[in-house]
Image: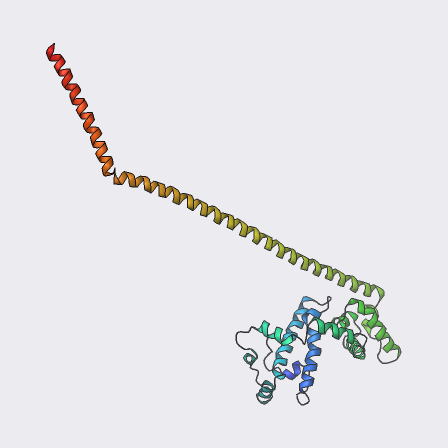
Length: 290
């Protein structure tokens, strides 16, 4: 669950002055900072830790905005200084669902691309580049990591902006600038970015292949189970048929012959007995005459 460290001022999170923070400024500042820290916008040169920090910052921005953009919650916060995070959730919504709903229409692929097209080459970008140049003592690697919507290919463009400012006396030459803006340094950053992009594409393709493989395995497993179920059903039917036949045969043995069958068998036995008696009597008479 995203959270804001204890005792953190929500206006500080959005880099605003509480006294002058109007609804319009809050929304505008949130849009600007959210674009900067949006996970989908992070430079390919950023480390995993830097990406994690950006994600956490992005979540804090969302939570701060959810409170300060709501008049009732803002009034409560301004009065008490208390952050009741539960107030931002309604019903059974998860934090992920809530923030997805919050950011939808404010920060998405379309707004990022729209912002990038307006920001690149603007006066605002020039100011940000020169500010980063001073802050990071001319280190172009670090400058590229903080300027919004930038990548390794922007290194030469930023170098031109800074060099012009140096020539005009607006900034001084800083130690790391020359070392990190050589042709070799630019090419190294571009190749590193291309390598990371290939790794990313490969990883994405592997995930797609694994998904297809899993889907295929699931389909095969479902087919096997269906066949097994059909086989079991047929075996059960055969077993029932055999059991039924066996029960029928047992019923005949257990119940014995019918009354008519009994009479017929009895008559046959009497006839056989009579013939046997007559045969014995005849033999006896013959022996007597002799």
